[in-house]
Length: 334
Image (cartoon, rainbow, N blue to C red; front, side, top):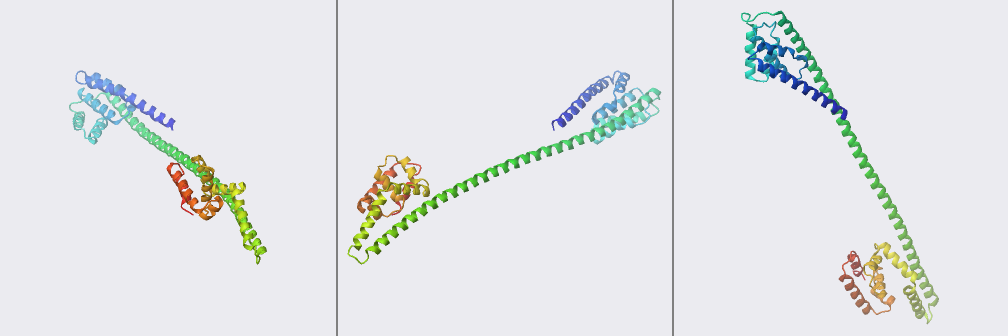
């Protein structure tokens, strides 16, 4: 792409340098036209028309060349050169120069006022050949310019397509990264579900074992005077085991954190000044236990449980923490 731009730049710079030099020569010839037409004519003959680079410069040269011949009363073998000026200025609606070209043509074709000159005729024919070469070179330059433009367009399309491919590749990479992250999240979720299923299964087994034990006790004591006492003692032992067994307490805490988005973990971090009994109350509330059950586990009356719940709720609500809304949720049940 850069090479094409360099070629176009060199082409334009070279053309501008040639044009500037020839414009200065035409300016000199036009300045000499009034005082020394012969010298002006010589200056115009020195210019190689085939090397001119734009039609306006060629038309100006043709007009001055024709006017120089008229000023020297020279005969033109044809009107091809003056017609260059007439055609250009007529098509571009430059009235003053068009009029000058028409007057020069009439003067050159007036055989009564012009004279033949073999050298001038030869020079004239040479300039016609140079003009033909200019036309051919201009045509080739136009083809070259069009070719460069098409090549530049093709190169631009290629660059644009490459950029699109890069963008699509980046988008595909981003989608792959998102898919990988999603797959990782799914795997983590599956692992979390597996942990929760294990914990729930263990809780179910514990609950069913308790039911099984109570039923066995009832069956063994059925029909005896010690029936009620035996069952009550069994239930009391199970309650004492539940509130004093650190393994069961840790298992309950772990289950709440897994199922309720680390509720108790956050409570410890954000309310580190809670007393052990307050934290135990929050644990039982997080498990969704009823007030009667909590009163048995804490060894307090239901009225005391209500008061302790109220104090704990006020204490948590007074302190603004990131998970305050989650903590408030444990008081909406029971």
